[in-house]
Every structure is written in structure tokens, then in C-alpha cells.
Image (cartoon, rainbow, N blue to C red; front, side, top):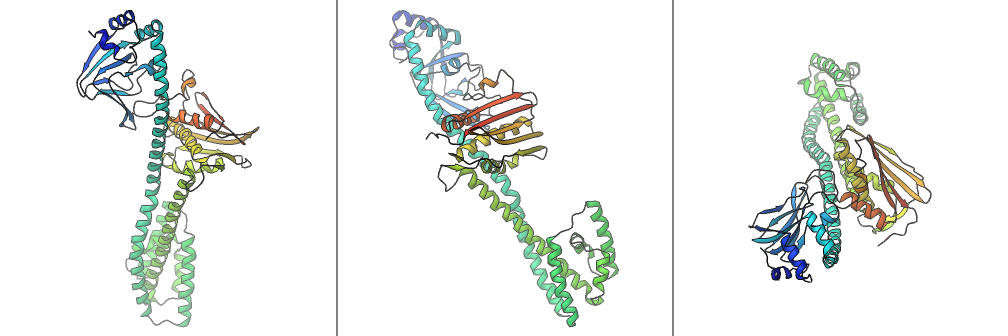
Length: 467
């Protein structure tokens, strides 16, 4: 059993009377841990207060499937009090002995009795809590920013992958196509053409550019039928490897009727060379269009990231909430499956507001991301904006299962989450609350029932922004 003199070395107990000391000793349990031993596990019921007398305890938190370091406790430290005092049902972090450690363990009921019987401890506990909450507030914001950065990076990597891969494929195929074009052009030059035929070829080249720019949109079954007809025509006219060039000709809208007219202007012995040159020209233009589309998509994504982060811009300025929401949707596009429908109901007459644009984008990210998670890849999200007196109202709603009434009062509290361990930090909505209420003097609230959840954010048009 621990002696009273050792207990007095703990700052929390040093001013207790001998009577109170004896009470503490009688009502606590002794724990000995070896290095690596688990003390508490995140998500387990928070039933105990711990006092570390010897050794070292390190806390970690599961964030996105990874153990993230939170804090280190040395002799004289207490922990577990925050979960009890804030009525958290579970531990918000895991604790493990880093060195051989000796601790006192007090049950939740004993802890409350100690606060009642020992006023000095109550004062000391709240002083410790205040400091910890301040530290946690700072680290929680940094953690949430890192998580938002991870979301941004994952979304950007996913969205960039398709256009970048398409650009690479187009560039590789273009290299091959240009080699073919050179070869086909040499073959055409070997034929003796009249001026009328040369003029027809020049006119044909212009037509190919127009046809490539307006590719025929047909269903796969119709395209297959047309390809069979065109391939049969080509084979009947002695075109070598007709199957290779048929799909490109069909996509350009070249049917057998067009080919009949075309054949009237071209000698039969070089019909195959002209058609293969045409196909290579069409394929090259199509690849250039794909390359342009892909690089434009990449450019749009880079612009969305710059808009999202307000890169190269002052942090505090007049912002358009619609622009921020659109940038956020672009960043989260990889999570918006085809079965999730986004409905935008924007009031385009809304004035710009004076705000921290990048911070507001974190709010939109958390709210939209939560809505996506609630829908579990199927449902609808509404994003509405309107003016409400001297405020801008942004509402993000979904038709998911809703939030239970007993949970709603707690959703903006730090570390409160309904997700499983490692699936959510419980910081996103708390950070959104601080950004809206503390930094922008606005208001954020939730209205939820089964089948409908609406987060409403109100931001003053002329707000007294807090720095």
C-alpha cells in the first residue's frame, strides 16, 4: 500500500490533511505496469481516474487507422479526469506504459466523493483541466487541419489520376499516330493526282477536322451494326485490315453512303491509302482533343485547390460563399459516387462577406463530408444559400438516417463522435463551430429527424471577424 509521504509528492494531494490522505489511500487501487503494457484503450468505458507515481505513460489516438501520439505523462500527473468531468462515456485516447510504471487507480464514484470531501483537490483539478483544454484546443485544431489536408491530398490525387493517365496514353498514342501519318503521306505522294483530286484531298482534310470535333454519339449496339456495314464496304473495295480503321470512321459519322460518294473522286488503286490516311488524321485530332480535355481538367483542379486554400491571397477578405462551396465539391468529387445526387439551390444575388475564406472552406468540407458518410454511397445532398436579414444562410442537408435526438446536443463538443474507433476524430464539427461562431460571430445549428438532416450556417454579411 502507498504511504502518505509518497502521496504528498503528487501536486494534486500535497495540501491535503492526514485525514484526507488516509481516505485517498483507503479508496484507491495500486497498479504496476511493465513497459508496453496497456493501461486504457480508446473507446473503452471511462470509469477511472489515474495518478502516476513512477514511470511514464504515453497516450495515442487512432486517427484514420493510424496511432497518433497525443501526450506523455510523467510522475505526479493525473489523467482520466476529463472524460469523467465532461461525462464522456468512453476514453478518447489509449494509454500505454513506456517505462516501468506505478499508478493509483480511483473508480469514478470514488473520484466524485473525493471532489466533494476535498475542496482543494476540486480547485486543483479544474486548474489542471483548464490548462489541458487549452492545450487540447490547440492540438485538436492542428489535427483537424492535418486531416483536412489529408482529405484534400487524397481527393486531389484521385482526381488527378484519371486525367494525368489519359494525357499520358494520348501522348503515347499520338507519337505512334504521327509516325503513321508521315508514312501514309509519303504513300499518297507516290500517286499521280490531278488538280481536282488534290483539291478534293485538301477539302477532305478540312472536313476531317470538323468531324473529329463533333464525334458521333450513338449507343454501342448501333455502333456495332454500323461498323459491320462499313467493314463490309471496305473489304469489298479491297481495303487492307479494314477492321483496324472501321471504329474511327464510324465515330466520325462516315457511313457507306458517304463512302460511295467518296469513292467516286478517288482512284481504286489508292483508295486504301487515302482511307488509312483519313483514319490516322481523325485519330490524331481525337487524341489531341483528349489531351486538351485532360490538361484542362488538371488545370481546373489546380485552380480549385488554389481557390480552396486561398493560396497567394490575404487570409481575411471579401469572399463568395458559392465559390468556396464549389471548390470544396471539386476536392471531394472522388467521394461523390454516381448514386449520390448533389442538388444546388443557390441565391446568386447574395452579397460577398468579409471572412477567412480558407477557414470557411474547412466548414463546408466537414459538413459535406459528414453528409456523404451519412448516406453510405446512396442518397441526395442539398446545398442551399439564401439571405436571412443581415446574414447569409448556407444549408447543407441530406436524406440519410438522421441524428438521434439524445445525440444532437453533443455533436459540436470536442471529441464527440458516433463513428467507430479510428473512423472519426470528433473534432470536425467542433472546429466548424469555432470557425463559424468564435471567428466569424455567426451561428451553426442542426435540425435532424429520420430521413432528413440539415446543418444551417449563418454568417453576418458585415461581420466583426475575430483575429
